[in-house]
Amino acid sequence: MLAKQNQQIADAIRRERGRLRAFIRRRVLNDGDAEDILQDVFYELVAAYRSLQPLEEVSAWLFRVARNRIVDLFRLKKPVALADAAASWVESEHDEIPGLEDLLPPIEAGPDAMLARQVLLDRLVQAIDELPPDQREVFVAHEFEGIGFKELAAVTGVSINTLLSRKRYAVLYLRERLQSTYADWLDE
Image (cartoon, rainbow, N blue to C red; front, side):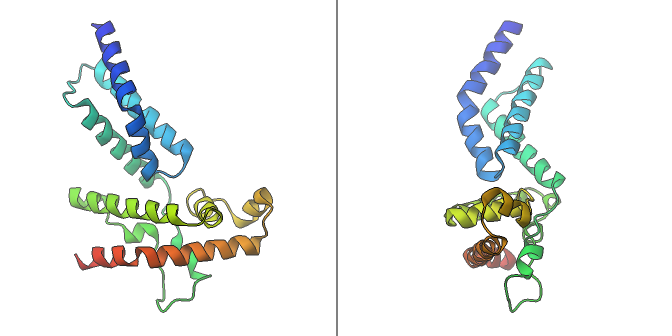
């Protein structure tokens, strides 16, 4: 029985590892966090098999667990402070630029909100991928990894003013690129 379980676990991991890793990486920008989530999902798989929990659709179950772990990660981390970072660099007709968490439907609002949240996050990741590499690097490091400009300047050898400028251009592009998505969501 144990040998059969081990074989089923190994087959599932071998079969789904690549797709599951890609699924997680599209939603989690930090490589370490993505790998942690992947390992957590596989740990849950082993635990489910060991507790003799019936798993009819292993693939669907793995992706559901991955999605739940991603949501847990976003809950644990402080909301991304787009408003704080962008407000000082971007002159806007609006008094306040909402933060990422403010733009997303609340997790507690149910399956429809989770789907909308996933779509919005997917579009954000796609928009971030479209940024020039130097702007993307600064934006991701500052917004998602919490690295300050002083530390970034020391690591990259690029001046703080240049980093601020790159971040400003990234925020401007993302605001423009995601404005229709945000407007569509508000209209619903």
